[in-house]
Each structure stands twice: as structure tokens, then as C-alpha cells.
Length: 466
Image (cartoon, rainbow, N blue to C red):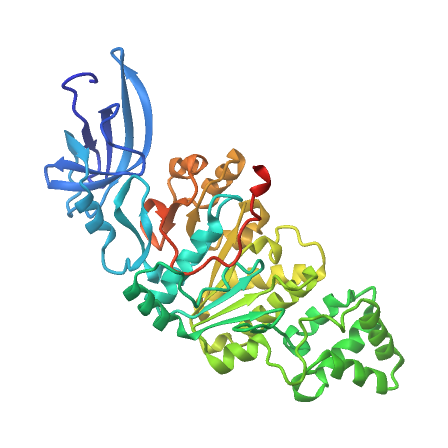
């Protein structure tokens, strides 16, 4: 084999997978599609592993793959011809019914559209890519497609204000596409820490946090501070309207109660600076949970970037998670998108409030899907998130990951993805990705296409370099 006149050949021992051998430069890349001329007819296959070898002094490529839509019968076959699949066949395969989300193009075939199956988002999804890989840009492109081509409500926790323009279209987009997107995005609402034109207040109510979260915010331990903790529980449970509408209402009730322990709790709130937090809803303002329930928006972008303190961002997340879980019996399908998820759901929580958020994410990851609560978590590294949350994800959208240890961890955790394709992520350029799982039954090596909407965040200009 090898050299002039050498052809690529494939064989199969089970009729569903194949092995192959080909000369260098035969156009059979890892993750690429091939046509195998089997006894059953010409079959489309995908190369899932690959290595080089030397045979009779010649350098060859060998590997394995999967036969796609092979007819029944499981017929094994000896060496038959193998060749790179034409773009037409690949496009037909990827354009199968249900693959309606157009993320960009294939990495090795710029004329073929990379597509995702919308129904695959009824499973949890992990989007991973290190800083500078194009992760946030690609997430925005995906959210655009979900808005444009599905009716799945989106609730986006946006810590950097990257997705605040999801309801707009950027200059230069085709007029017909822009008009279709504007119609689909009509119900997108943006909530922010600092209200401005087009941005409503992002607020939460004390009662929406739940007793455990309020205690965590006040740094009350159920054992070490058992007297204050217990008094707080009883005060919250006996409050009018199933809880205090505002911090002001709670502190006023504690002040006039005449109860010494409740007065200590009031002073604790003041000493810790809990009462002046910007995230609290005043009596006249609506909370994010109330906006979600009352307006039933197409999407809510909860921009937490304007909050000065990390505990405010976490408190907003806890209130959202608490609300979704408390109302899970509605079985209202939604996609909860959490960008920079390690900020609110870290592998190693730093305080009781963050630990409570992790517990909530863990519960939703394990049980939320049956109630229609689906997660899309984006982070730079897998080890930044709890393993028992990531292990529940059936979709992997993987961008460049330089760390060999991280790639090994991803390959181990996401066993449905061929390990050699995961390893390939170390070579990805800006905007390149591996798409796998329920959203992409055939793993795709893709390149993200142009956005329809403006980016909300951007790097600081590097004009200082010149």
C-alpha cells in the first residue's frame, strides 16, 4: 500500500462500523465523511479515529469509523473502495429532519452548513472553551438560532452583559433575515442592574430566596447560630403574603417586634450591608420571577454585570432557581442558559450562599428535565464546575481547550464523544468547535458563522500595542 496507484480501502466485521487504510493526502480527515462501496451498496460513513503507520517502507493512514444508516442485515465485508464523501451527500445527511439550527459551516467543508437538532436541547448541554476560543460569540449565535427557529423560552443568566442585544439585529444582515429575526425576537426582554432605555430593572424579592438562602446571605449557621437561625425561620414563615415583599418590610417588622433576637438579626442585616443591596425589588418594582411569570416572554436576559458584589449575582441566580423549582409542576419547557457558569455554580463553593446555588443546580441537573427545565452551561474549563452537574449533560459543544488534562477529563466524562475528536480540540482556531450529543448525533467539526445580533461585550481595544 502507499505511493502511486494506491487506493483507500475499508472493511467491516459487523456491518455497522468499519476500519480503513489509505495513503497520505487521500482526503479522509478525522471527523470527516467517506463513501464506502460495500456489498450492500454505497454507504456513508464517518471517520472517528485515525493514526499513521509505516508498511513496507511507506507511510499510510489507518483508522476506524461508523457506517451511517446502514441497511439491516449486518453484513461483514472484505476490503472495498473508500473515498471522501462529496459535499452534497454530507449536506443531505446533516440536513435531516429536525436539524434546523444553523450554527455555521463544517470546519473542513465551508460549503456545508453545520446544523443542530433543536429537540436535542431537551437534554442538558455543556459549552466549553477557554478564553479567546470564541465561546461567548458562539453561544450568542446559538441563542439567535433558538430564538429564530424554535418556540423554546430562554432564561439567560448573563454575568458580563454579552447577550443584552439578543433582541436586535446588527447592521449588514440581509433584510429578509433581519425582518424574520425581528419578528421572532419581539418578546425578548433585557433586565439589568442599572435600568436604562430598553433595559428594565433586574430585581429579586426577599421571599423569593427562601429561608435557607436568606440565612446563608446573613451568614447564619443552623447550629452555631441556632437561636437567630430558628427565629429567622419562624419570622419568614409567619410573614404576611407568604413572605416579606422587601428587605425594608422585614427589617421594619423585626424592629417593631420587640423580640431581642429579631433585633439582632436586623442589626446583622445592617452590619453585613444586606439591606442596601441593589438587587432588592422595591414595593413598586417587579422581580425577575414576576416578569417571567406575568409576561411569559420569548426570552429574558438577566444581565448581572452591573452588580458590584458577587453575592448579588449569586442571590439573583438562587432566586431564579428557587422560583423555577417551586413552579416545576407547571411543566413549562424552558432553557436556562448560564454563561460563565463557574461564577455561580463552582466546583468548590466559597460560602454558604454559593453552596446553596450549587445544590440547586445539582438538583435541576438531576431531576429538572422531567419538568421541562433544561440547562445550557458555558464555562472555560470542566474542572470549574461540579462533576455531578456536568455528568448529567448529554450534549457537548467543545471549543479550543489547550490543557491536555482538561481534554482527558472531557473525554472521560463525555463518553459518547470519540476521544480522538475531543483531543483535536487542542488544535481548534477561533470559532471552531466540536458538536456532539443529542443535538448532533453525528459529531461535527464546525466553524461558527456570522452573528445576526450585535455583541454585547467586547475585549478592551489593543491600540496601545501600536
